Image (cartoon, rainbow, N blue to C red; front, side):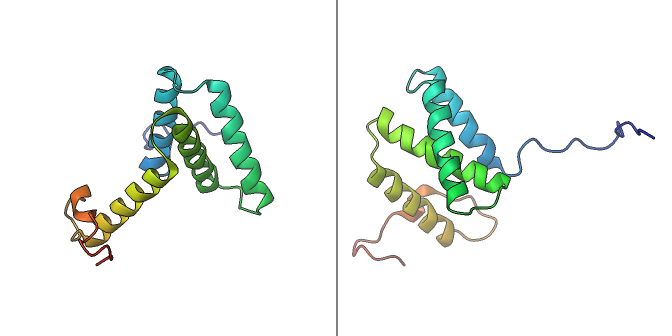
Length: 121
């Protein structure tokens, strides 16, 4: 017998992780701003999803959103002055900042600046 959904049960989140929503929101923002077309987005995302499939990546939401992030980065470097090297440097800066931030404190990008000698702490 069919049982209706429990109206008092909290709704299932639309996204597993906040960054999943952020990737799609950023892609939508770029499309709306005319930086790249919806067709370019669909084609590029499809290519990254196909590559993930060929490489044997599992069919999971994490695989999908990782492909979406890769597609967004590829299109961003093609549609802006940002380069792949700039994106990589910024990711490394955030990673350093995250590792150096005490638990419970906000992560500040400045904390991830490379030391003067160029080596990670």
